[in-house]
Image (cartoon, rainbow, N blue to C red; front, side, top):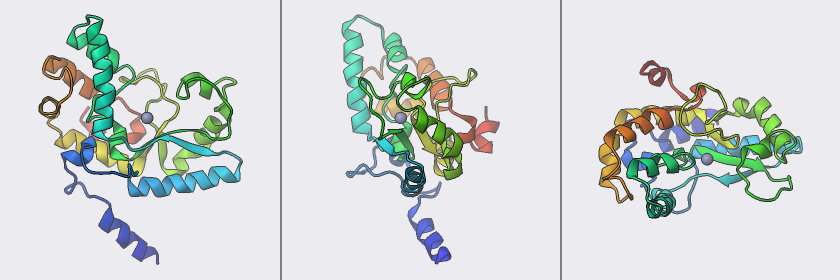
Length: 236
Ligand SMILES: [Zn+2]
């Protein structure tokens, strides 16, 4: 039975050679917004384990398409442009909290934003304060800190002082056994600047190469070291 299952998975999970730019950038068709298969299985497992201890893991955001990320980007771009900001400055502003379309880890289906479905709260959901001190998601956060790694999940944007890129996100977990490889493939295969300029994304022809390449280094690779393969680590 076990070998049959392994065989099934090895047929359905994409290998490095099979993955193309569309798979890495949210452009591949995924109308049901499904998570990557092994990620979904692992999420089911950790959700069941947490439930036994009274924690209700709730998915707030999983797979996100390129089109969805682009609509977020373009809306913000227009807003900052109307305030008179220059393209590179607009870029700086948006990437404080949002990813450039085609560069979100949510495009991979391996990353999830999670909260405690049993907690009562008001206002914005994904804010760090809610996961610390006496915040509503503290019990969930403590449980995840103790158990997430056992199920393959790692926090991506940790609060480690030496990490570059996106701000601390105590809700954003990644399924490391798959996403580690995806990051490596992303680093290998993406013609980053060319790709972004070939898409219909606001500002992409006005933002400098330097700014885009710095984002690639600091943001896309500014993640928890547990989510990097030895190859990715060596390149830095
Ligand atoms: Zn997220």
